[in-house]
Length: 550
View (cartoon, rainbow, N blue to C red):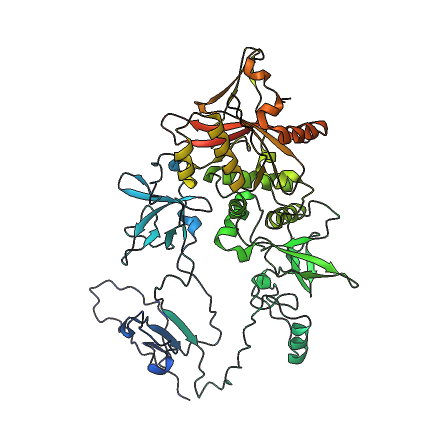
């Protein structure tokens, strides 16, 4: 067989000695290697439903087909679109933006436009050639990030779900086709794709035995699939080579996996993790859940009688932590949603880093919100129980509580509800100065966010409510007032308003419940109301002071 000649000749030496030459280091391309770029033919276009077409045939994206690549070519799937987290604006810059437009949710700074995302973060946006909003980097002449859309009924935005944009995307097909003279056999038929995340019990073992081949490995020596992980399962490539193993790793069907720290030696559930994830603090885990929740840690348990480890294919967290909080407390402000989720994460794990016991507690808390089941850790399912106490200051005749800023660091010290999410009620009740109107408004707000409020009293001289929540035995007593500025000023001990009986304050039925809860130390004392600040948006705030009113 004669040697193959290159299709491109290199320049002859000495052709023009007066010109500087650059060595040609590009590889020769054999004549047998061909690259075609073509549009799909009529037989390649899938059947379309009857009715008007949403895309003309001429606008179909081209298909790029590469033929006769070397058989050892490594093909990798890559995404040309960076994740939305790459576009987040620094927090110090977010504070300089204007407030969101009450209709569109857009925020501006000069000629640039920004939006707040429903799961956290603020990004710059712009319109692409199709007049659609996309995330945009500061140095981009035109936006190239993920498509964005406003969440109906809110001022927040979210990435458009893949497959719903109607945009055409090009397709790359890489096929290994042997030439007649290379002596290679035709490629084997592909296995059908699994429709479930995990194979049926014993199915992978049967196929492995039938094939007689060993377990496939990646280049690093780590197994890429096993009986415990279907080839298309997200954790199928989380295996680690033996030289990177540690005492906390677990082995499943001969493959070793890194795990999240246990947190408790006797905790029955461990969580395997992607080995590229070093630690899981709140920000890291919540970002993974937002951007690609299939990469979150997965639970594994030991199955008797052999006590071998088995991976649970169910997602521990179907949505981000802020989304879970928002589902049960839909009218919390964006800042409070983040603060509650952070506080809940810290309480469950006992530190700023996640552990197996803490992840299980978080899963149980989110599930109890959906089912209304009782939780032994009541502070994990109620933001009002997560609140840190704010002390009273001043003296007997002039006491006050200083309210921290809504976005202050250092824990959860206040809970804010966003009037933009209940505009009609806010506009109706806020002009009124009646104590009864304030009680009616607050009772409706609490009810919409999952609380059960005792029937308010009809007294017009004192605004207070008693209420409960399914899932725990604590009772809340909320003293209400309209707050102007950053302080709640309290009545003096000799003020006649402080001598109103408990029945007159909150009603007979509520008063009995308060007395029972106070006797068993299961009452939480709160204060709050609509807060008005100069040059800042209005809000409805609740704080905890633990100062008895009985």
